[in-house]
Image (tube, rainbow, N blue to C red; front, side, top):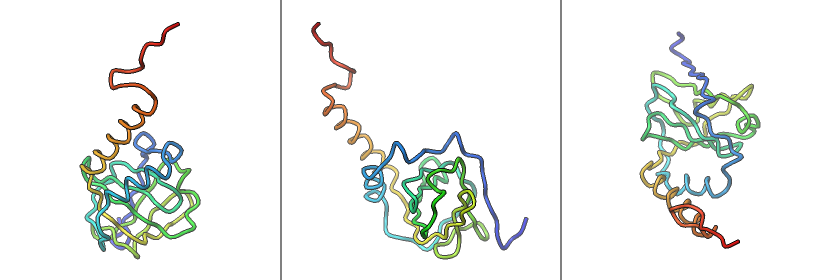
Length: 147
């Protein structure tokens, strides 16, 4: 292993979330749950990731720990890859130094924002509830229709 550049490239196809089922609403929920930018975060492993577009990705380092990363454009392969990697140095990922590896792209991390996972889960629950209400269904499922 090289101590200068420690690259984690994990096959996370099973843990990945494609941007097709996301959109502006999902990005808004993550941004609302994200704290102020930090310079770096401790990194041992990548549990999963969620792509939110060609310049935004959330990396999950633990089940209840996530970071919203903004990367420099162009990072055109990010929305389409089946796995990503992160560069790190001495067990930390640093903004403006480290990168997200997506296919042939090496996308420099511009900003790191810790995500309040509890607030994110609450926002997602509310979004699901409003979607169910808008479709005319309650929590029990679809309502019977008279035929």
